[in-house]
Image (cartoon, rainbow, N blue to C red; front, side, top):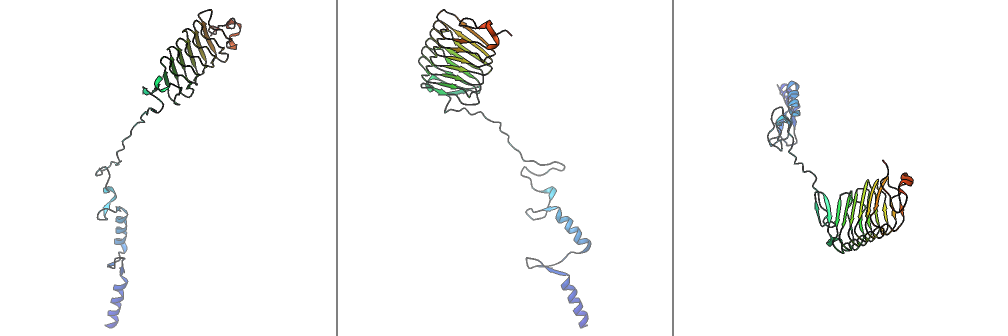
Length: 253
């Protein structure tokens, strides 16, 4: 009997294990152990530590059988921000600079179209539009735009009033239009490196040199005997066809 009691005690002790909580429980074995391990693999911690994976809580509500739950994401499109430190205002993605913000000159922001509007005697400094995508410089008022005007690689449109645009004008890009049809406007040099140049000169206008030698086409019109007093350089591709006198016409296509 003593031997039998000892054997029973050994069997009970070897069939038990002690967990970290200090509670004794029987260790699973055989088929029961495999079943419990499979069930545990399908569980994720929940409030009770026994929630199956297909019933795991979703941030968007309960899961639906066969449906993958994804969180709602509010996609906000890029919002255009007007650079108010430079532009007086913006309209349809165009930076507009009024004379009040260009009294002593101004620089257009890079990477966007720019329009500079100068009133009478406005913009008494350089107007730098060299980094904008397109430029419209409105100096169509008397004595406006006394500094240099510079456009970049985009389209450029410059309009000058009486006695306006007394500094150098430089443009490039695909198209450049310079309207100096007002009296005594554009008295300094004009350099047009655009693919297509169009320059109009009125009475006493275009007093400096006009260089569109690097353009593909250059249409320059001198409307008065006193206009175009300087040297005019036409595109070399035009040859003598547009090289005579102080004005050049459109290059043949």
